[in-house]
Amino acid sequence: MNNKEKLFSRKLAPQNSARMVETIYGCKWSLTVYQLLANGVNRPGEMVRSVEGLSTKVLNQCLKKNVEFGILQKNVFNELPPRVEYEVTEFGEKFLAILDQLDTLQQEIDRLLS
Image 1 (cartoon, rainbow, N blue to C red):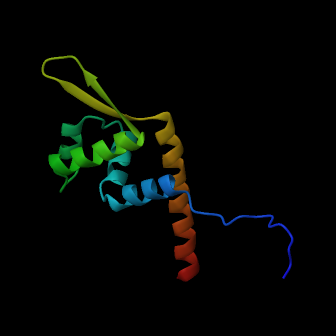
Image 2 (image 1 turned 90 degrees about the vertical axis):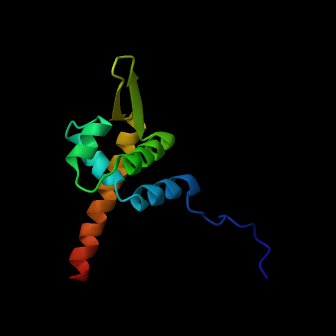
């Protein structure tokens, strides 16, 4: 046996970012929400009205998870009736750029396999 000191330790997958990507892709509505926000639809009621099959309950769960991850920011306006809007955070912009890269990679894989 060689008694030389090891130069490298085992590389592990980044747990938090991997969980975040898995959770976002696991929610079938997150990508749709990002698309709505990119097109200026930032109020929950308008989001529900804009997408067939999207319920208020599911949307609220999706938005809450995205806010917890820091991808989206919830803005509550002190008005009557109350107004709530969502926007992508600076961190969210970085995260969405990674999702775009994953989409591009998937397209390349699809081309290779077809």
